[in-house]
Image (cartoon, rainbow, N blue to C red; front, side):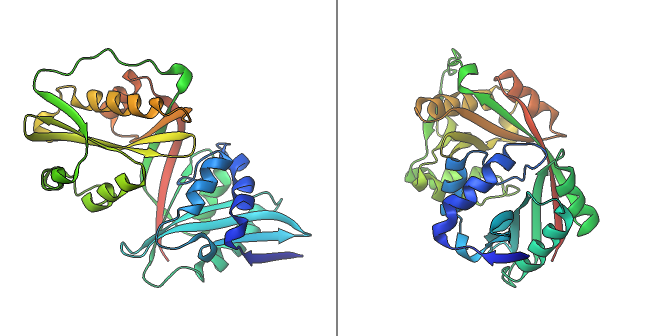
Length: 292
């Protein structure tokens, strides 16, 4: 008989071990979690705002885990990001529906919107959310990767007057003025991430801030995130220089085996930039949403 169980904090490693081999396959991949046990365990331990034990469920049949679902909760933004469902049961749809129905009881009323992102090859997951639950697409991105073995330090030199340095508290006002408000994170949230070992790189020309990007450090991989260059300074190669600096930092950390970056499918210019820097496609992510 299939039973649903809310997990405890002591089960983080167990849940990470269940998710990892599934999330490493495109036909099961759901975004926001990594692909290795170590990375997923770290991410589950550090879930923001709503802790793991309050937002994750298991489906168990005859003493065997056959499904897992959870979410990232962002009450101050009014939405959750479903993590899963990850299912190893023959009846995917039935187990997914049971997990989803129970998960909704754990979502706070302050979060009326759900946003999920899956690889386009996760056909069962996409069909469950779109046809089964009525989610609609709001974005589509390619996730690109660079393995350590493919990384070669850049020989590009910074132009005269250009400085790239890590964020310091005295940069706050200039960074806040440059920050692009259309991004997923506020300027304050990006800066707060620096205290968790995620360096923020600033590119400036003299005292003028022209661009920025952040390295988000995982257990064995790092993301290049929030890469932005001011509109007036685009086309000058500043994005490439920021990527060089972030790759140099990331691969200088001995435990990192790869770098990752995401780009919208319609952002052809940015994708060409990343590919020129040595990135190649790994996943194509479809982002879906629904008011719940």
